[in-house]
Length: 272
Image (tube, rainbow, N blue to C red):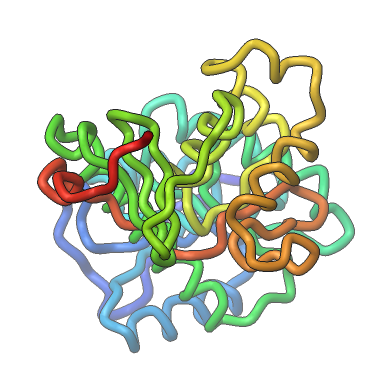
């Protein structure tokens, strides 16, 4: 068993940050010093401060000092289990989490991690630019999601790639201002994607989301629902650019989504 001093938070020199709820710092949890240094150096080149931890106790101390803006979590931490640590984090925090896993165990761990509440994942070895891009996408999605919680926005809708979805009337309008009919299941599935755009979602997550709106979805394959939605959203459903398959995990809504206010819908075409 490791001594407590071996699990102390490792903060690189010159990386002292102020504590406080949702500070600008990113917590990097990995027992590989080269990975920690790679992430810290690149993120700080882009103005993002980082702190590092190598195990459960160090993570707990960091969170006690103030919630970070995001956590990058390796699932293989020697004696500590990353999935257990993710479960503990999610039990008391909704901080964005990106998980890292080894190539030999990526599919099962990633699916479980996403089900436990991770926002995204990467398989080692990974490109540091891709990790940074995913971090930015997760943060952007969370900011947009926070805006959605205001009552005015909830009565508005979403905009994506020239499309608009009105939450009040459940009307989907294409870039040519034409009304596109949606079944209850298709509407529920689209909402699940729009609420987590640019994040991989497992089939189980999508099935749970659609069950809340349409019991008929229970006995259908979520893949069939995705195919039906693709036929309405994609220029070429056989080569999708909006709803992409995330191999070994599920699907991802691959384009940015913007939440819009009620006023934006006053001139929207009415259904006939």
